[in-house]
Amino acid sequence: MTKSTRIIKKYPNRRLYDTEISSYITVDEVRQLVVDGEDFEVRDAKTGEDLTRTVLLQIISEHEEKGQPLFSTKLLSQLIRFYGDSLQGFMGSYLERSMQVFLDQQTQFRSQMNNILGQTPWSVLNDMTERNLELWKQMQSKFIGEAPLKAQPKPGDRKR
Image (cartoon, rainbow, N blue to C red; front, side, top):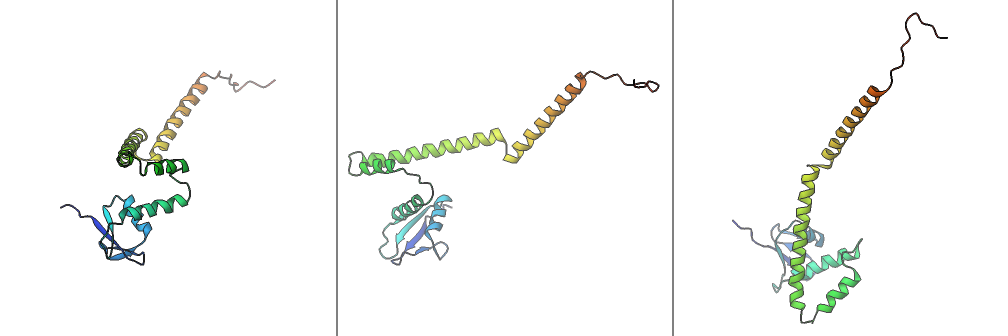
């Protein structure tokens, strides 16, 4: 059974209603749907008009204002220059494909790092600690084994 697209209705009072859970949700909860990879559409409650892009742009705008922005002023200016340009249609699909390639490479990189490092950072630290301890023991045994033995005093000998 294929899962249908989740519908979120946007009312004139700017409230968002998630029809799947029969409850009002916030823009942050819509952002979480994006992060979770949920397939959804935001529709105007009266007209049925698709408002998904508008809500997604709102999420981006709000996050750009907080903390470390993703888009530099230069990048935003370059994007704006493509509106009305003959390459405008090409640019959207180009950016979409570029982002997908980036995400695929990121997934591959993370997978390779997990293979290199093992399951968790703690297991890596534990392995390093065990190797270092073994090297330390080897170094101590070599040092002690190579150190010249002092002559041990005999029971009848006195210090002079």
